[in-house]
Image 1 (tube, rainbow, N blue to C red):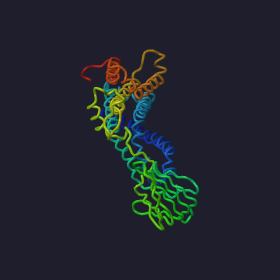
Image 2: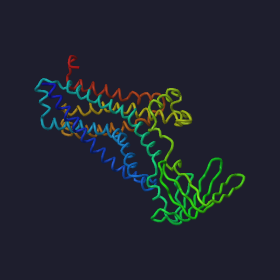
Image 3: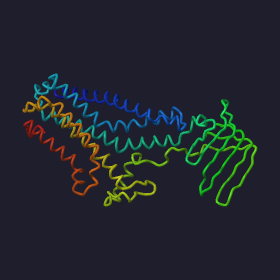
Image 4: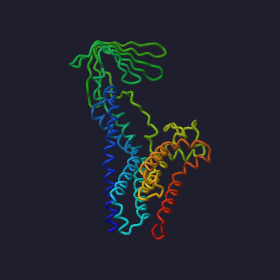
Length: 376
């Protein structure tokens, strides 16, 4: 009978968590998706690229929201059990409150593992895939970026100007300036031209023009009747370097282990390939590994709903007090990384604080439930 009761509780928690996760994550995803529309409008990518790019952002959104959604889930489900007196089913079947709290604690460990997997593996992987996909995708809407009598910065090193862009794809009065390496540049001017799409991307087919190569020694002019200008290898304005949250956890941990004694230094950088300061890496690892521990703390706070306090004011306002306290814990967990850069004593306190809070709340619950050793 006990297994059936706990199975029903698990079903209610997981069902509500799943529905809440889909609803809240979808809302945030849509809002962020609107802010990312410049991928199409300004960078020239197609709808497919935009959709895949935003879809790969879902794990990051869900990871950020998981701790809040889990707390809301426990708070609402346990509150519902208490308000509807469904919680009495547990007590009348001989289930002690500490056994009930232990079950909630075990569930929280499962969600803790999910959060760690997301933080350490899935989120960095999908963030890296997202940027790689955008970086390597072809500019499907490239022709629409080229407008009449307007300078278009396709990349940091290339500017294109067209006098007229006709509906049939023909271009008139073409000016292309490309910055090359070693302070060199190339200017291409053509009377007519056309964008030609191939398997690798787009190529300019230019007619009746001149190419000017400029370097420190001067310039060289070359006239042509017909030539092609390859654009498939063009690097767009899309960021080429990975951010910290797109870097594998194993790489960051390896760097931190190597420079652990100077983990708070902002001048020292990990390496040329992964050029992040050591203090940034330390902060990122802290957020990926330490912050998820607050999930267990929130589960213990939610468990206080099943314990009736003797003080009338607390009893009458228990839900408001616990919700406010839980919200403060979530806020604190998201800001706690800022305290690790103080002196060594404060740093150690904030590193072990989640563990200390777990023990504190659990011991408090043990005392309040008049536990017996054989029930633990």
